[in-house]
Length: 413
Image (tube, rainbow, N blue to C red; front, side, top):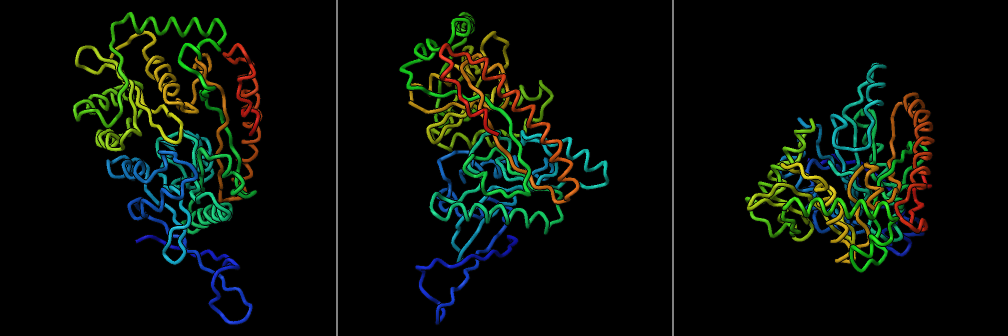
C-alpha cells in the first residue's frame, strides 16, 4: 500500500462554500508514495508534464520497471510521489529509494564516503530523477497553470519530509529544468554541471550546418564521414517500431557487449529494449550493417521537438563510425524533421568540435544533518568556481565561424 502524509492549503476563494459564515475551509492535499509507477494513473501523470519530455512519460518509466531494470539488488526501488485532492492527482514526481549512487550521473560518491567515515549511513537515500538518463527535463510534474509553483513547492516539501520520516541521509533532485529551481528552498544545496547540445538554426540540410563551422572543424567532419563511407558499412536510419524481434536482440547485444568491454554494468535489459519498440516513433536508431548483421548502433529518443542520444554499441572498430552514428546522423535527422535541439548525452568535450555547444545542467540536494550539509556546501562552493571557469573557457572554443551562435547559458549557475 502507498504511504501517505498530509499537506494543507487554502481552498480557492471561488470554490463552493462548505461551512457557514466567512471562515475559509482548508483543503487537505494528500501526499502518497507508491512502490510502482502503475499505481499512478497514466493519463493523469502524463497530463502533468509541462512539456512532452519522453523520459518522464508514464510509458517510459513503466517500461523500466516492468522489464527488470529497477531492482533493489541494483540499488533502485520505486517510491513515486503523488499529491492528491479528493482522490484526484494534482502533482507528481518520479522518485526512488537508492541503495547506491550508480546510474545517476550527478556524482556524490565522495559525499557518501565522507559521511560513512564519520560513522553515518549515507544509503539508502531518496532520488528525484529518471533512472540511467542524464537528460534535463521536468522532475516536479505539476502542470503549467497558476497553481504550478505552489504544487512544485509542495512536492519538494513532501520529499524532504519523507526523507526525515524514513530516517534517510538525504534527498536529491537531478537534471532539473530551470523553471523548477525556485521550488527548492534555501536549505537545499545547489549544484551545476555542463553538457553539450546542438541547436537547430533553421538549417536546410547538413551541408548548410557545416558551412557555419570554421574551416578546421568542417574539414575534420568531412574526413570522418569519408572514412565511414570507405569502410563499406551500410548505414540506415530506422524507427524503433519497425525493428523485428531479432533486430532488437542484436541492438541490445551490441549495447551490452560495449558496456561490458569498458568495465561498466549494462543495466538495461533485453526486455527493456524490446519494450522501446512498442513506444511508436519515440525511439529512433542509426544502424550500421555488414550484410544482414547489425555491427553498430546508436539509439535515440525523441519528444517535444528534441532528439536525445542515449545508447551506443559496436562489434567493429571503424574510424569515425561512432561520430557518424551518434552525432552526424542525429543532426541530419534533427534538420530533416525541424527539431529544435539535439542532446547527445552526458559529458564529452569532443562534442564541441562537432557543433555541440556547452549548456548548464542543474541539481538540488538536501542533506538532513546540518553539520554534514555545511561541510558539503563549502565543498560545492569550490566546485562551482571550477565549473564556472570551465564553462567560460569552453565558450572561447566555439567551433562556429560566427561566435555569436555560442550558447551563453553556460554563464548561469
